[in-house]
Image: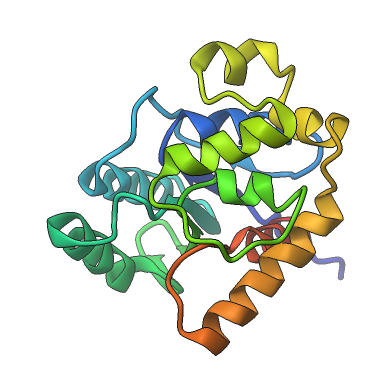
Length: 205
């Protein structure tokens, strides 16, 4: 008797427009749906939780959240993020009525997704005081701009832009993995990207 293969469905939730445009530029490279669409401003933890719950209700098998850490370093923002992470990260949520199970994973970038972009060009553990410092380093290396016009039109797709300007995807994967190993070894909480883990997960399904 032939059994029908079960298709894995993946939703990827980003926190802001950079994630939206980067994920859009990966269409045809990764087989995951960017859902829901992201507004042109950073989302709150309450909004992120709402989106996670919506994806669970929609029956996605895997729900991957791309997290910028630059606004989660201290105070109420950090408390709210850690609460959300404790509730969902690496947890399988069951909807018995629907007969579905959803694995939720968070993938962090510190300070923000631009550190993953920078890893396409070089490895560093240099601390950046804010996301603007990181953006300026990318601007110096490859003329990157963190503007709506650049992200949506001028760069002609962020993934293509990074490669066309001397970046290397495999190097970025290696540098991401290296940053996580050194983070663990050194006990540091800055300048790292979990995007290598994200791509390992999303590209094997």
